Image 1: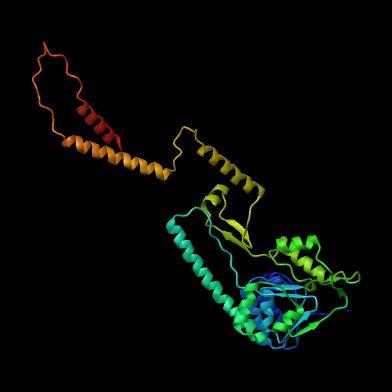
Image 2: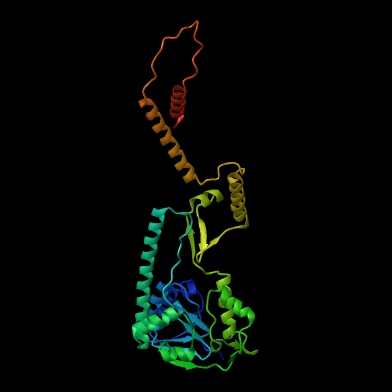
Length: 352
């Protein structure tokens, strides 16, 4: 008979059935009895994980049992449990705090400075959270904080034995209905890559036998599928991309886990707009192809030269005036200097 768990956390930490509110309600229903929690998750929102750990610690009678690959926030929530047990074929993964970074597009020097300042603040926040998590892992394991920080930087999977050696796990157990595999299939290697996870050591994997189709590996595949086709992922609305929002006639672009959600029609609209913009910017080869900034500089230099020319001509002394004999003298040739002055003045008058 399959073991019954009081709480089953097997999704994205922060989604409804793996959230701090869900755990709070479950613990309230359980009262003061011993609680057994089954954990099988690739992580999620650290805020929920820290809160869940605190709830487990306050209850005082919680045992977490780890199956398959548990990473990030999924390991954090176990730190408040009285006991942590890991299946012999499970894996454990910790890392530094991460946050979504948005920094792209054309920027001037002020924009770049503002972006650098924002990223530095974000880096400081991540560092603060990393230190909080490192202290939590150190308290559970008894290891120095420095050693924990070094392990978090390495970002590698620990098998059950290693997790126990580090002190994150108190006990290793086995389930005879789950048998280990000898190698990852090419399909599974591709799925780890697509999920952005390093490949766990081979002892971290297991598959169910024919009599137990709902075993460990089945749950692991389902969790990966949830990552690729999320139904409980966090959705945010970004209204800052004003030009794109105006083009698509929407209030904002939907993002799921940092990825934009666009319909086929919206992608076509963006493609058509880019194509039209490309046609408008195409110019014949004989036209000036200098960058706009260079053209502006050339214009300024031309204006300055004309002004200097006018001032020089104005300061030049005039020729001696002679009386013209209309009957004997031929019409005088055009005065080159006067013509040049007049031409320069005309040009100056039409300049903006």
